[in-house]
Length: 527
Image 1: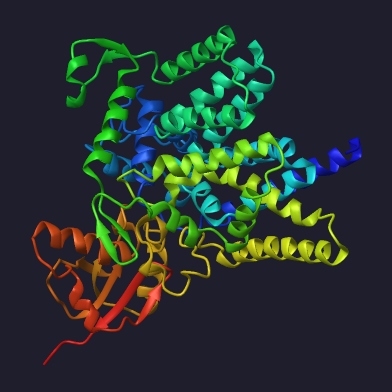
Image 2: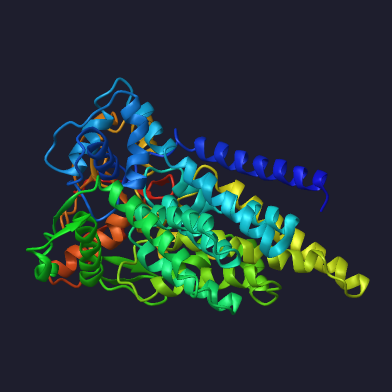
């Protein structure tokens, strides 16, 4: 491609990213505070304001500090509450404008969306060519789950960006294993580890699969690898303020008397491991489990990825033309394979890191059809199919605005709650809509069980009480799908009952669905 072609490609790339950023920013005023935003902001503010990191070491500090930076510069500070949930809410409401504070926290995640898009473009250019790279960026920046989590003050978009950046940095290092690329690799690996502890599995697996895709191991360059490892270690330790302490988790009793660098990192990893071992209440296809299912994430991908994107990705897996494209395909499959045995089936967000690489694979499928050199009729047909699938992916994404979090494709769109709940459908994002609707209906009193961790006293709701398990009521009732299904099952299991906690609601028809995630009932008082 000529210099003019490269320049046009850069402008198209920047336009696609800018459109993605604009769409994400446009969701801020619609999407209420979601479940994990409160504790993340509290932990990041503690790191910035107090220089400590004690509220919740089960996530590393990078993404959390990025979230807290905007509110911190806005003048907000730690509030000294006893736990991270109360602390996060107190911080957000301590300034003049709660909405501004939450928006600033969410803006801290936008750089990770830009970084991930940049990696898709750079890796795509090497794997599927200049035009193919732009197709990959188009698919990635139109992926509803990506837009959703890039618009929230949570850790999943940071992990997605930093894992893909680390994988790409390693790919480039295998091509030119000099000290400069080793240092870049070290920075990228450190960022991934500091984004979320899943990277401790995703990054090594991605590296091994890149080596397999290339077919030539770079291991003789031990000195260069040592540079990368040293840079990564210093940066990770520095993020923990070069702290040296003792591991406090009981699972590491053998280390209890030993002072170690970044001991909080080890505590955090052990907490995540303990959470995975004990499991987490999950729902899939009408079934419940605390241990999850090996097929949870393939099903989540099948119903929450635009079908145009999925079909192109399947085509791309069959027509991989370069080793860089093969590395992307193996990397995406590697992330999926790492998560399938996990017992924490809490949402597609756990495997969000595979989508930058999968977008490159899908772009390869599109380019194969668009550049077909077969008989004219087949070339035209292939071009139309590829164009149609790309248009389908784009239109499907646009139609979901601003409800990207609760997006489901045509397989599950009519009744998504039959497939998944939790962060795939119901994460508290519709609470502002509920408050507005309750006001419009002039509801005098409300019984409510919703997935919301914000300060509900600030929503302008009428008088209300919590909807208690196994206690039928009359009047207005609001319940979200995670509470109705997963929490209802969890309570039943605790009480050793076969009937779900809110099963009595099945006898009534809801008045309406508020947003995508909350059912509103009006139950007449029985004579």
